[in-house]
Amino acid sequence: MKYEIQLWANAFVKLIPGYIGCRIRNLLLPYRRGVNVKVWENVQIDSPSRLILGDQVSINRNCVIHAGGGIVIGDNTLIGPNVIIYSQNHRYKNSSELVRNQGYDLKKVVIGSNVWVSASVIILPGIEIGNNVVIGAGTIVTKNVPDDTIAIGSPLRIIQKTNF
Image: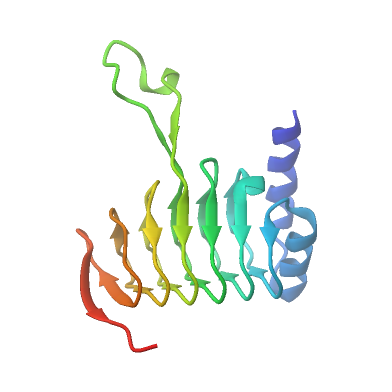
C-alpha cells in the first residue's frame, strides 16, 4: 500500500513545472539529495528511496529512472531529456516459467561527478560511469565507462579523452 501511495504522489508532483515543481519534488519524493538539485517535470522515478543524487544534479524532462537496484548520481551531473536509467531487469533464465513470474535481478548503477548524459541515452543495470564523462545522444550504455572520456553509439565506444 505504501508503494501505491508513492506512485500516486509521484504522478501528481511530476506534473508541476519549473523551479517550483523542482522544489516540491525535492520536498515530497523520498530520494536522498545534495544541494541545488533539480528534477524537472515529467520525470518518472520508480523506487525513489533507492536514488541518491549529489550536489548540483539536474535531471531533465521526460526521464525514466527505475532505482529498484539502487542508483547513485554524483555531483555536478546533468541528465538530458528522455534518458532511461534502469537498475533492474526481469529474470528470464527458466524457459518453463513465464518471464513475469521469475522476479528481477537488481544491479546498482553509479554515475560519477561532472558527467553529461545527453538526450535519449539508455543506461542498463549494473553500469558504472566514471567522473568527467560525456555520453553522446542516443547512446545505449551496455558497459562501464572510464573516467575522463567521451562515449557514443550502440554498441558503445570511447571516442576520445575529455579535457576537463
